[in-house]
Image (cartoon, rainbow, N blue to C red):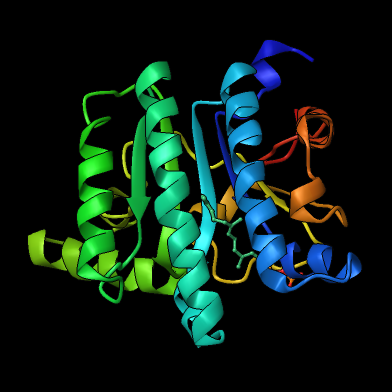
Length: 229
Ligand code: FPP
């Protein structure tokens, strides 16, 4: 793989935890645990091969509609794994950002998020974005409001007010779990991103599967609407 064919910014829709558990005759919660544990190795691997920003869809604005018990478990897992990810981010000099409305999170979880992300706020080279209480439409509305407050709404001013402002353009979106849709993930940033869908369920998506996605990406011709010369 050519070094310059490594995507700078990769977004991941980590789908399939529930089905992974059901296939094993277990509760969905078992799948979420396995899915959370999988985050660590994929993040480590992505930064090792040269990716500069990784954005993970951890909890969408729509996920609040899941059964209360499942929501509670996901929040617990988030708090637990954010701590682990912070330790890794500090060691590897990666900025950890938890992005989303976050208004409906408990005050405790918001305080924990503040505490952890502050430990990595000095790093500028690489970003690990965890989307929590996030929706792409909501992000665009928020960005438009902020841009309007400061002046004119243009493509540039809108982009400057997205959660991912200042980070490399989104190059690649990976969705595991077999569905072929974006589900409100990084809608504005996705304009020219390459899309990679795989049937592999998130807990089974290992480094070799990640490399398959990168290899597939590296062969794509990106034209951004222009004709090839
Ligand atoms: C989709 O599987 C997965 C989620 C809604 C949650 C994703 C969250 C994690 C992997 C854990 C927390 C993340 C971090 C960063 C620590 P699903 O339940 O929709 O699976 P299904 O489609 O098989 O039902």
